[in-house]
Image (spheres, rainbow, N blue to C red):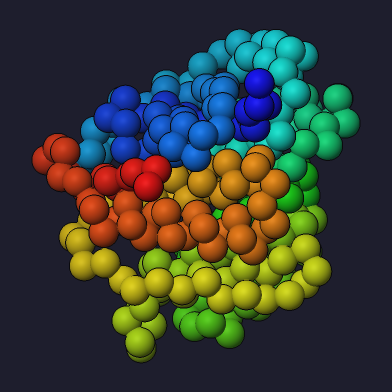
Length: 266
Ligand code: PLP
């Protein structure tokens, strides 16, 4: 029997399935990797809007983390929507208690594509000081990178500057997603600052689609699955970028709002 690689996702629920835990587990399964899921919060959302966020009791979040980590040896932990300060502190405390050495991919989710706030402002300090330092890789988009680094990003140069400042928070590597920047060549450029301080630019053509959501969650999950399968970091990011690019090319209008990725394992 071949041994399956295993990723633990710690993230919020999106009942419409385009983002959050539902998207994460779908992406991980499409990579032939086993995905487990600890829910940080429930959202009432569809492809148009996040209507409400329901915080689950912190003691119950702690219980989920403890029982799965006591039981299963994961290859990678992927962290997505955290919602508030208490959730961040709970996760950081549990990781500290067990001196967790599992590589962590941290997607520092702050605002949804719809514009709805997914992380309370008073949680940003904790995200920077308690969780970023534990991450093997942190994957901000442009807005999140600006907040984490306190640098205004306008081009590839300021993206690199921002990545270096975020790395100084303690993460081993940083991937800044450039989808929210307009580059002269009309492409999307992402910057990877790797474990050895080397910069790589990972690019792809821009897909003309009005709005697509779930790309950030899905990219971080694809990278997590690739790392669980022991890809090196650059290959994990390049392969995940291609996976999302083809998903975006095959976008699906499933509801009345944003499109979602049309993902396939092929
Ligand atoms: N909802 C949940 C539960 C999420 O985890 C995320 C992103 O991580 C989003 C919504 C936002 O996704 P998007 O910005 O792609 O709409």
